[in-house]
Image (cartoon, rainbow, N blue to C red; front, side, top):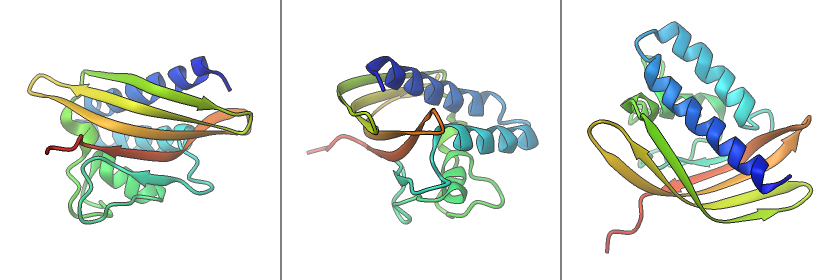
Length: 150
């Protein structure tokens, strides 16, 4: 794994979140896209530790169904608090890595990412863990939070 691999994975993740908002009017296509997105980028066939930014009641989303619920909500959402984070029609997501730890078996990246749409700009802190699965880089740790407001 290289730093370029991590940056490419972050871009794929950002592009996917933006695409979810772009196709949100076509629910069938959206659900197919999100299922593929989670299969390609996350290691839900094994264990994923997932703590999304705007999760309060059900803080941890360690399975594909609850991750889907967080990203796109819907009638079959697993967590009632979900409104579909990715449906905010983000048009730009920028990762700023504080640091990246590389290992032959895994990688960790930590920093800030910023989400922008026509109405808002939100900065959040992230820690992502990656591992190779059948030659593909997949997320097995996703922790995100809003910076401390002291």
